[in-house]
Length: 323
Ligand code: COA
Image (tube, rainbow, N blue to C red):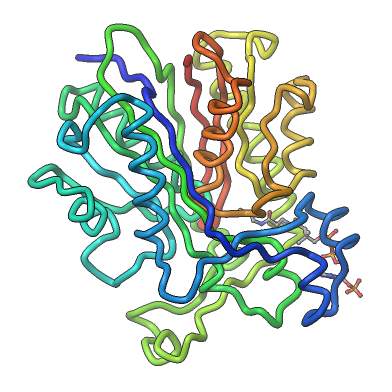
């Protein structure tokens, strides 16, 4: 390893418009009680017409850069995790690079759905570790509302829009202690948008590219894979779960979050939970929750924090960070 990597800044953004469970009762056969008891969600934010993933990413990114005391021109790598890119190409990372007035550094998207931020962080960590980057901007941003069937109550109540960002910099001391990412395409049909540019371009043009999910099976898999992922991150660092200060989990379902906390024997007051406020924002969910807990002073310098996430693919991962 040439250099250690540290998170030096955080930022996040949620679109202005809030859609509550109560409001969803008006157009869907559902109830606030059903949604909240099954998922822990009370409301989600929805991007306005004409507001796109890169718009959300830009606000979060600028906040992260500012909180690190850096300037846009210090950045030498941009990785954006998103499932809902503004355009087929260029990548959202290139669009963001242009907005930020940065020229020449590598900029690309990674696509691992809800585990996307963990994948993007893994890339940044390895770029910095090998000396290929010294100041990386990592963003998770989604307008997931655009790939939901608003008549399908089993999926549309669970997701929302948002963005989170961090700056990762080369440092003398870590920082990021280890990163572990996984995928298993065997389960590609359990959580997916089954059409794309190559297979069904007309459906895309018609706005008929929707998220489909086998909820129960996804739930079972998420609990099992994330449980293994947190054990993996502990074992690879030779530390006991009692040494963990905070868990910042993917905000998909409060019952999944509680199951992982239980596996870690971590009391829920050491777990950052923001799902009630914005639902599942896919790649944005971990950096959003992390930013909230850093800004409100819960997560402090020196704390040991585990990130974990699970998504379509299946994809999943975990990371141990010392703040
Ligand atoms: N409002 C009211 N009822 C609903 C509903 C809604 N929004 N969505 C589904 N239902 C109904 C179902 O139709 C079903 O009715 P039925 O028994 O008459 O067929 C009933 O509620 C129970 O559905 P079920 O699927 O058994 O509920 P569940 O306890 O498994 O919870 C999820 C459903 C989706 C909340 C849960 O499976 C889950 O969270 N899965 C993981 C999802 C996830 O996190 N995905 C992202 C991973 S990145």
